Image 1: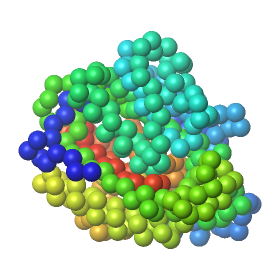
Image 2: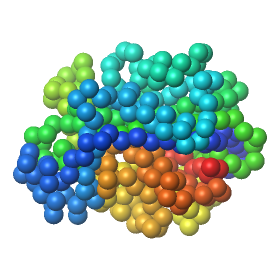
Image 3: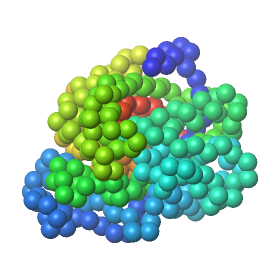
Length: 335
């Protein structure tokens, strides 16, 4: 997708509050050793993951999303009752219908608002920010609640040692509001998709085929790690470089890079190829694993809590994964 060039892009949307939540239960690499043939010495060097959070039996994505919004309200004192739109990025909704966004609306008693779920897998949160920016820029909305939430543990095959070591549960939320234009908020965007590779990461549904390719229909995540790695390292790196070039930016201009926390090997390879310094890269995989649409807000909120991300910093959020799709958003941080 060719977004406007630096001479024409503008935004009047800014992040005014952030919140997050993870379930109480911790699953360590030692716990996984009891389920499959693996160990901490194998997992950490390849993924960077030490532990992940697991939702309780009766805890679902909507519960995590609601808790993340409540955390945001308590920390920033914001009001969400007048939100105009709720966008929830998730691959693991409580149900196909109603959507998670509708359940969030009901919990907070938001009287009149739109509510949609976005299914763009690990690119879902960045994609949702792009959509929220468009709603605000169009004048249709003043306040949009953007949430990324997943309970991937409920669709993980714990007999598959190549995937079960990766995934965890969590949620993060942004409040985006209309502000006066003037350099704050979103300054650049990028998106692209190669649906011909979609069968390399899937969660089965109605059809026994994806792009003509037969799939396993057992309602569990399936991933061809080798092919996803190749695509991410090459195509995502190219996407980031293309985005920076289009907007006249250099890797050193970025104060913080927040990629999807797929695994550390992928993130390090992307940093090497794009020239973005690894010490300015924020991830959430170490403590939370791969949480798909929740990984970016979890990583960013941890850094905000630690005081690392400050007003005026240029922050690049970049999601990539199932689809295979990628989405990037550059934000001039204002919190």
